[in-house]
Length: 266
Image (cartoon, rainbow, N blue to C red; front, top):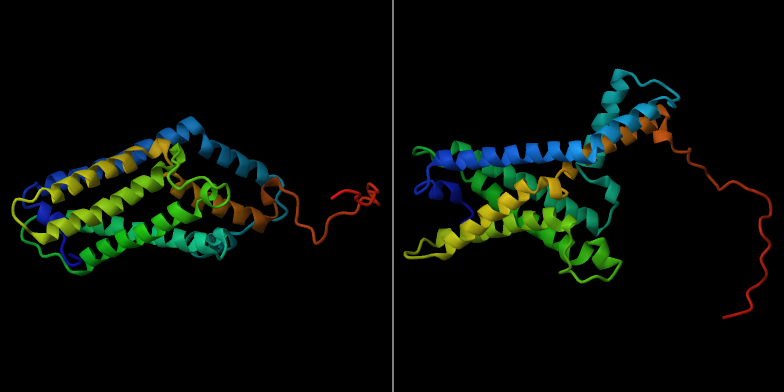
């Protein structure tokens, strides 16, 4: 199972051009959904207006080298390792899900576009990457979904409570889960089976929901958050701090304040 390209097996009954066209359509849905999100919610407009306003209060001008250095450090530290989440379980789950998804998607594109037509043999590394990526996505995603969500961990809501904001993570988990199930049932290679077709259908539907639901989900946050992290660090470097007051070593003293009496109750 781990060394088999499931798309190459599928290409024996479905034209490879159809598989490649499906990927192109998914990419198109992401672009359209993100653009609609930008136009309707005006997130990017607010982001640029806020950055322009903050620049007016900058205390120093950053040179090109400094800007490149800040951006590079942000990418390596804040974005690549999700440092803003601290050193807890939430960060580990996010890193597992993030890198698992990246491996899952990259391997999918390579196997579909490079190894589904003709008699090309898929190198073992790509199916391995696809399966490992899906497994990492499931580990990080289910860990987050069942135990680490804020409304589950802090507000005692049940794990099965679903809201619109959960569309992204649920669709992503469905893609990885049904993809693994489809690959496994396909690898059994038994005659007159129907379960692999069921899981293939579920895999296709979950992809349609994931990439077609960009406007209604948190899919676009993977584009917004890196930009916000870069802008935040640039603002700290030039002294503008996004128009926020500077940090203080201790709170300001405003006299004795209100003199309170000792409590007389339990």
